[in-house]
Image (cartoon, rainbow, N blue to C red):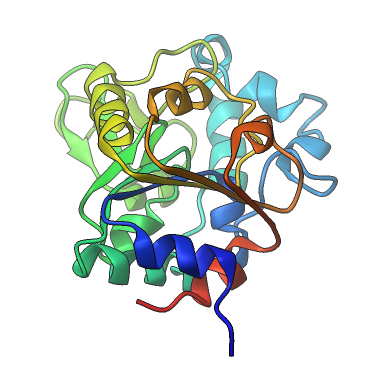
Length: 240
């Protein structure tokens, strides 16, 4: 049986970086954002999700924000799929040098990966806006209304990047450093429509850029390989 083109790329690579988006986690039961049945295709209490997931709306109406956030952004039942598991195997084999993810679900770390740059934050990390006390996802999930700090009573905010907020600069610096040092960059499950993360691809000057996505992306034109398909199926089929 002949190997797939992506398998050939992975077999040759020595320093892989994986750049992923919402399409990586759809097989885990987490909806994406911009597909026909994605999160942004519907309204919530007469408001668009993009409006609710903004920094300004968080301060304007935190109760509505948290109603939406609990219902649509938290998926405690989700488990890593074949893509997450394969990336963990690649890291253990020291072929994968980093994961740059736009997802906030934390599934890469749940799968076991340690070299993860969560450029939009994580639902598993929440902090008190007054005293900086740390809380897990369950604090927000199991509270009612606006979650409050057990220590000082301050508002507990998810460490996720909202529209209008800048991502953590040190996370971004680390992500760009890994991409610049990679010989192979696999871009998967992302429309590459969100900045500044999409611009990180400009730091890649390695040998092979591979794109795995169900729909066309802006990176297709410069890619060495484009694979149309489900990310979990394509990545899960790889052999070390």
